[in-house]
Image (cartoon, rainbow, N blue to C red):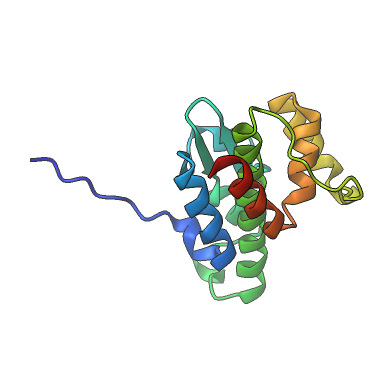
Length: 160
C-alpha cells in the first residue's frame, strides 16, 4: 500500500491569512501550487509562474530569498523576512489573477478602468510579457496583485 505524503511548501510560512484563502480558492478551482520548479531557474528575477497546461501556480521561494539576501545567518532579520514575504505574497496574488483569467475563458477580468499599474512595475511587466506574450493579461495581474480583495472576488466570480 502506497502512502501519499503531502510536502509542506516553504513559501507558506511567508503568507498571511488572505493569501492562504487565495490558495484555497485556487485549489477549489482545480489548480495546484508548487514550489521551486525548473521554471524558476530561468532567472532569479522571477518569483512566480502560472503554468496553464499543468494548471498550477509555481512559487520560486529560493529566488525571493536570494533577491533579498536571505540566508541562515540573517534569518532573524525582520526586514529581510518582510521583504521576502512581500515578494512571495505579490507573486502568489499575481499568478492567482491568471487563474481567474483562465476561469474566465482566457479573458481579462472586468475591473474598474480607473485602476492603473504602478509605473515602478514596468520592468517586471516587460519581463513577464517576454515569457507569456500577453501584455494586457500581465498588466492586469500587476494592477491587481496589490488588491487581494479584488483577486478573491474574481476567483469567486469566474472559478467557483
